[in-house]
Length: 348
Image 1 (cartoon, rainbow, N blue to C red):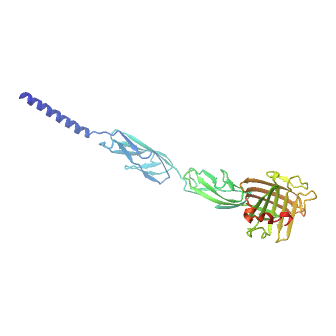
Image 2: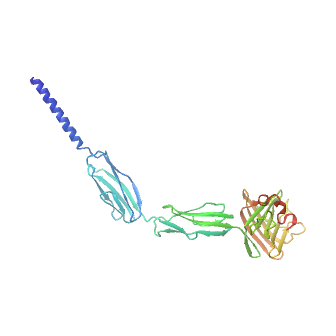
């Protein structure tokens, strides 16, 4: 009987000790680590945000923390992790656990950030081979990073370099965009590139451009007005250039000798002023042409560049450049357009 009582006492003591030990463990679950929801942050003076701290394990008994800033002149933090940017610089925000002194940090950089960008022009009209420079103005003026990246959405029409220098390449439209590296703020300029020709000092913009592709070469017609009558009959002013196929891609002088399989030809007509000029590479003379040069090259499907500089026998000069898309005469005017085009078969 005495032995049974002793055993019972031993069991009771062991159970009591285990329960007492277990209760003690619940009271001493320690912090293992702490982390923040952001490791870095960039702000402008006056901006603010909240940091959230996460303690591991989640059932740690003492979750009290302290917040501090390495430089309160740059950024401050309160007891709830609320950070306020004060002035330019870098500050480290640190959260420290009361239990174990575990820490986590967030590097806060305070800068003067870009808020917007504008251009000195929102629209430009340029003639082929002309250029212009766009100037980007970043706000605020004392922003830390005012770097700009430039781009064109149609480099076949207009290009732009890293300094905002725009070059007109071919007739058409392009949008030039300035984008800030910091903040990706944008500003745009709509660029219209126009072709023109000049006769005796008076310039005309090219509205309609048509080409013909024949066995011996190419014919180009440039009109300063829309031609919408179905053929060419409504065109009271135009420039026509014929270039031998073998001379495409080369600037060549106009001479009397027919050096090519297909002779060159130049024509200018203006019904309003009753002026008509025509010349071609005949052996016995060049008609109204005294001298000059022609150049043409195909730059893509239905796209060309044509340049001419013609001196007529009366001292008047015809110059011009067209670059861009030309519509084939058969498509623009119908099948009869091939033979009804101005200057075809000697008839102007």
